[in-house]
Amino acid sequence: MGNTTLRVRNETKRSSGGDSIPHITIVVSHPIQYFSPLFDELTRRQRVDLHVVYASDAGTRSTFDPGFGRDIAWDLDLTSGHPHDFVASGQQRFAQPIRGYVRMSRSLARSDLAVIHGYATTESILAIIVCILTGVPYLLRSDTSVVKNRSRLDVRGWWIRIASRRAAGALSSGTRNARVHREMGVGKIFAAPFTVDISRFANATEQTTAEERIALKSSVNIPTDRPIAVFSGKLTEGKRPLDFADAILLTKSGVHGVFIGDGAEMDALKNHPAHARMTILGFRNQQELPSLLSCGDILVLPSSYEAWGLAVNEGLACGLVPVVSDSVGCAPDLVAGVGVVFPTGDVPALADALDAASEISEGDGFRVARQAFMESYSVSASAQAYDSTIRAILWSKGSRGGHGSSGPKE
Image 1 (tube, rainbow, N blue to C red):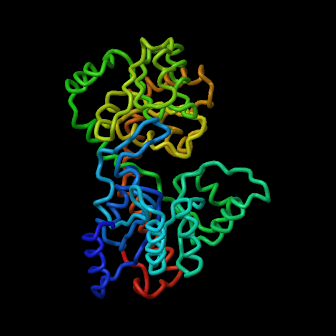
Image 2: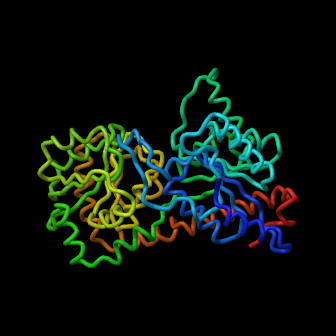
Image 3: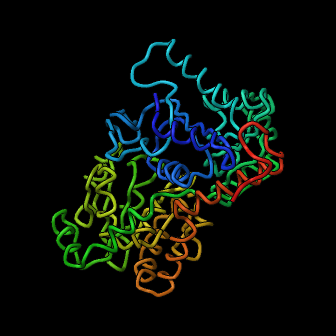
């Protein structure tokens, strides 16, 4: 399993003498379109010998997504740019995942450092235990933005605190995530922003002419004479797409709503009183998404809870002003001072936010803020944060000897 060519290339570099680089294992649930560009960039930079272990190959094949309510097969290559293995792939028998976990444990045991996504899944629990037993320092990576109040008898709470306190640190996605890690007992917090491949989204905006955008809008029944606000994601109750639909009727600027996605709230949207001022596009795959987002002026995310909200990253990359509820994790980092944050579930406030955002998109201040976002939340910036953190951890540990040199290399 995995990408043999990339692994051989990195193993050759790692054993070539003076250019020795640390061996890093990342453990994550499955290939995710948001993470793959970062893993590819870390591999391309060759400052670490990266190996990614995925618990499953969901994401590389058609898989049922309960949020979308349908089978999803992403139209992007999510794995060929970085060395990787799968603990399990497809419909495997019981013994095959066991062998996969053994391979994962061996990879971790010979690592200089591990990055473990989450702390409550089977693969993350095993990875943390292996690291503790073998003395491999590990960094936690999660998107949690709210501390859950757990009973003192709740085993999960005890485990999370043990895993946090034994960690070499945490890679923090933002302000709220850092606070969660800190309260769980992580000693060192390192900023590593959640990113998407913003160049792919930005190019769709910058390389599309006004005439081409008008033609695209016309082809999918999006008006050209009104502010366009876009909801992009799963049409589930928790993401509150019906709040957006309700708010459309209250706007003074005549906002037209565009819904990209599928899910349980689809029928309610189709029968909503605001349907004449809405375009429902249904599920659209990753290759289509940048062009469709570039037809908008505003990105709307009214969720009851959103750990981060990577749709905001995508929208900003396409030049859309973000309007999010105060339950969206990225609100203090990406939206405050750039877009509009409104109280969760307050439909009139959402309508006012949409009106305000339609004016923000025309100002020079937004363009300056967007440029700052493009620099700080790029894949390259995230990879640099990983590199800096890895060097800091290995330097403080004096390196584990085997793979790394006497200190971190630039």
